[in-house]
Amino acid sequence: MNKEMVEIISRELLPAEDYVSPGLEVIKPDKCFPNMIVEDTTISNWPYLRHDISHNWYVDKRHKYIGFVSRDEAHILYNTALKFRDKKALEIGCWYGWSACHIALAGVELDVIDPLLDQADIYESVANSLRDAGVLETVNLVSGYSPQKVEELAEQLQRKWSFFFIDGSHDAPCPLNDAIVCEKFAENDALILFHDLTCPDVVQGLDYLKNQGWNTMIYQTMQIMGVAWRGNIQPVQHHPDPQMDWYLPEHLQDYQVSQLSTDVFNDFQELVNTIQPYTLLGEARLFSLYNLARKVCLDDIPGNFVECGSCQGGSAALLGAIVKKYSRRPRLVYACDTFEGMPDPTEIDIHNGIPANDTGFGVGTLKAPITENIQKISQILNVEDIVIPVKGLFAETLPKYKSAIGTIAFLHADGDWYESTMDIFNNLYDNVAPNASIQVDDYGHWDGCRKALHDFERLRGEQFTLNRIDYTGVWFKKGELI
Image (cartoon, rainbow, N blue to C red; front, top):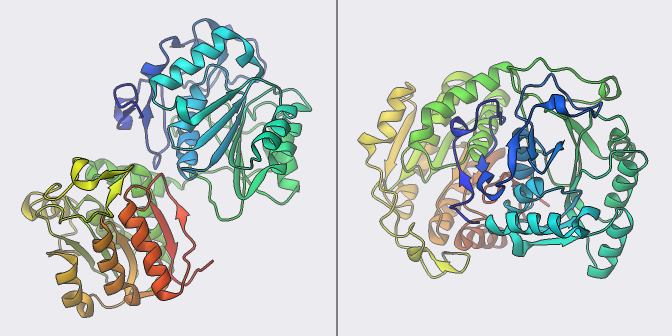
């Protein structure tokens, strides 16, 4: 990723009239699209463009009558693709590459099929934008028509895909044919997203997958997106912009809409806004923590919460706030950390081939004195009687506190390094209650963390059913095995 051209930002820095659902990581690759502008929807005469939804309508100024996916829709794409990092993805219809860029930035290997790519100016524009974003090498741009070109590409590359985005021709029978061919070459764990379900012809593709037994759902966005999924994968959760007066066209009335309850929506937003200065976790992982911990409380699973790797304390305080609001029984949140910086990594602890100490996040970094950080945010949220800081190396503190901690109803393992992660699981796994959830923060980022989790599986003769949160976070339930 070209960090100068693609910003990872807070949603407060988005342009006016843009919206991104809570719980989604936010990126801003706008600099990679110098011809992108906001246009008035009234210039388009396409009958299915929702003029009454006042989100920014982005277009390329060279062709103002065809819009890009909205900011919210682009982030559904990006956050969904994060679940498929390092896997194969296929996009049918890319226009000037705005959607392709968001998908590729999530770290998938992306094939893109669009007949307009045979036009030199469009191909060059798409390639330049992807190059500026630092993802061109992971994208295969192919000129051609679906479904024929999908068949050809699958045969030529012996390819199956895990993630699909269908945004090609919206006229029947094209969306249906796209859905049929995508299903044919879909992995067992797969997800397919559709754009522009405002158009009745497009829903034929989603209808087909629903009739084939896929799970389906609608995202209430500017142009309405649809998702179909199967296997060990879950779609991102989304909440429609509460400022809009939403409605569903008649041809979508039978579909479930992704929507958080008002209480959850407001509660999570308020918590995240408060803890943001005290956490390094992205919003997708914070949202996962919130959902998992809240469910533990509502299901009344017995035990305390434990976080190993608390740093500034924002996520521990969030867990404390959830206990305070939702728990039916007294619980404590044990927040374990050196609070004096990262311990020494080993040679296993690398990211993209770079040793941890050469990445800027090595030994001694992330120092967070208790009184200035976790204690302060706990006071702000009024949970200092719930959040218990445990200072020291895991290898030293966890054996001592294991008995006091007792049964664990929720475990957040954010140890980064191999040895730290092994210390967490070797000391605490047996304390975790059956069906309790465990979230691991650094599985996708640090090789050592990933190796530790799989080494522990082998030691115990188990294979965890891992659920992807984003490019690095995963979670699983104890006792739910492959």
